[in-house]
Image (cartoon, rainbow, N blue to C red; front, side, top):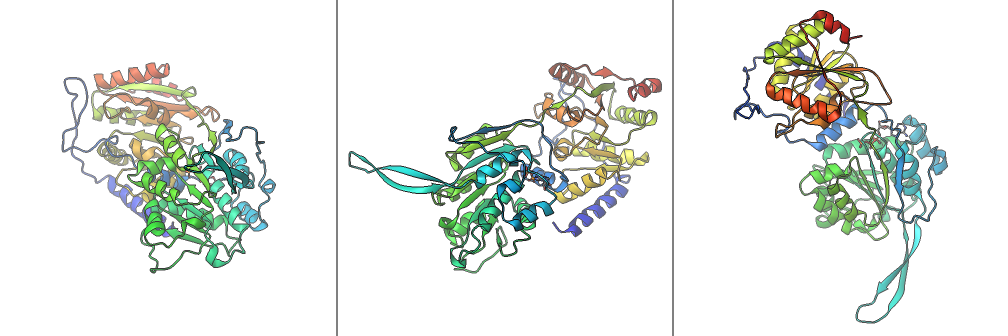
Length: 506
Ligand SMILES: Nc1ncnc2c1ncn2[C@@H]1O[C@H](COP(=O)(O)OP(=O)(O)OP(=O)(O)O)[C@@H](O)[C@H]1O
């Protein structure tokens, strides 16, 4: 991404911060219905649960704001297709016997040693292809005969949470395969094909390829993405093609820019995001069907629900599997409180009292709707707080810029809704305020989101403070159910009592 788009996003955020205090937002006081469920009227804004969660945007946001490898202390689980074959793992990049220029590229990126998932995935992906004898039945005859043998490279499905080094792993694998073949004549090139769910994600992965391969200038990369027009009859001769399923399918099947039979490595990245996008699943499968039998199939995903698994098996039918369980978040080190209020204004007053009584270095405040978030940001801003607002209308790059500024401490309060904040690492934030409790679209407690907002991985063990604002019988009921679910007491806090508030900070 060009750095000027970041600068632009920052300018826009600064302008937004200045104008927050001038925002005029319609009063949206709402009452619970007869069942105690709060609904806004039809013309009021959507809740963030109603906004379609855009997994691709979330994934891009994660990539833009990530500064480091996500550490994970869980053990990698490896399921081998052939359980008898020895299992290799590497503790250094040297052990992979990469070409020196490639090793130089890896070190230039600041990678000292392989990440957990890379320790196992890299030797598997780079293993010499195995000689496979195949049995073919001959139709209409009553015998089988040994027909052919071919070199079958190791196929892999790998799953680990975002930020654990999957992209770097398959980029290194592709570059390594290509670097060993660099004397191939131009007309018979075209080795690796990588599918990404969106244009932006394809560009991000392309950047990693360019960065890691920068000491190998003769290795060429092509982007099969919308807007990238080639002349009729042209043939792709680059070593690696990265693109989105629709364009790649066109380039293979209709326009014939790509000869799928020349592909030796096929990477399907972000499988979970891919299948969340209409049509991508079928297009990916159609592309996969055009590839030669000895093409190495590699699939990566951050999550592994059944739908991803079903898709994965269609694309990589006989795989080795590597999984790294997500590090669990816990509420053990978090002090949890709730404050009883009657309405939104009282919630705001309670928040001000908190700020008046204790020193809060940085806080994240979650609201249920964009409109409440904007209103609250404006009110806090009027009170003199340095407020950042993350809102669903913002472009991903703008959101990334807001998060970056917050991380750097330029703003001390971040007001947001769920959808926007999912990718944010809250380790540095000591106070989380649920201005509205997290509920799903049916109005039931959303325990997972609650944990995600305020939980910490046990390892960091940093103490945190969570304050929940309760403003109706309904929200009290939600709070009780959250409390029961986690079997952790949430204490009542009287924000009119300054001495009491001071105590919670100790
Ligand atoms: N071995 C390594 N040592 C240090 N940093 C690494 C290593 N491998 C990857 N990284 C860095 O860690 C971050 C996350 O890596 P990467 O993007 O490969 O993860 P990912 O699992 O593909 O995430 P996502 O699912 O979001 O695509 C990146 O900034 C990357 O440069």
